[in-house]
Image: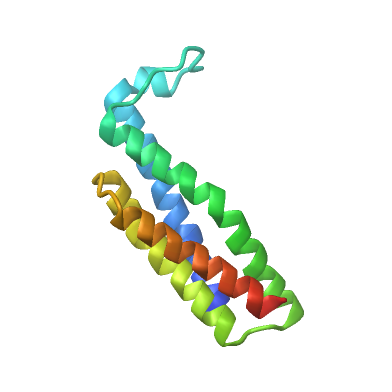
Length: 128
């Protein structure tokens, strides 16, 4: 398996962990009766739960681009320095982004988000 595909798989695991954390935070703050129910009325989460939810939403906004580029590179047989660096930058930045967001660390969180975006751009350059 290529480095890029391995990092895609690792990113899927990271996304699943973030999804699970979102559900656990919601259940802890709002109660299992609410989270297991139809949720007809929206209830806000507290600061930490809200950050966990928003961090996961942010992951879901960028992950499709990352996944599409890694898969396109695999299909086209394009694995090079650009794609390997891009995949590494994306994965490691996303790994550090989540705790920075949940802990409410300003500026550094945005910088790390920018690094993940650079990773996507490098993948695009390497695949194109």
